[in-house]
Image (cartoon, rainbow, N blue to C red):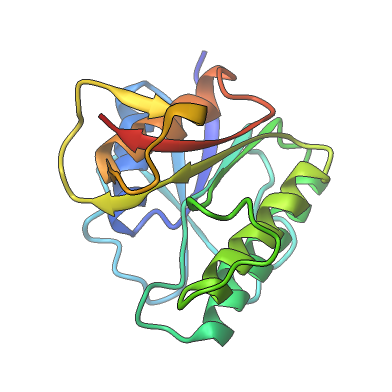
Length: 200
């Protein structure tokens, strides 16, 4: 059955592949984009809905069966923007999805985001992801949280490892991550789970 799915971060390297997966499977994909965003690389057949993750307005999730948050402030931004997008933007989108009666919310997180007090040079990023993860868990929404290891631009692999057996020093291709995110949104196979992921 075809679903209406909103993708935040759709213009990013992973998000574009998420959208393509959804369209290939016959679903109606809608990209949440900022005004002025370069949408030229988005797959044909995607719908656009305007919204800025730093200032989301009510109604952006209306009519959606599922929401996938695959956005990120990017490695070139500072801690303040990371918190605005990866924490506050995600939390706001979760709240709006709940208000809109969305059936499922899928969140792209990160390896290490299960820690409540992370340390190191990306501690602010992991803390933002941790807070977003916890907010989703407590929201009452049916959820799936994916925490991949370091991302690469490789294609789909023969195998994906999920959960306990993940090597935290391994890598995950964006193609595999996109596939699992789309699967989580459309099948319910990963409902109620926060899980690590790597490509094998």
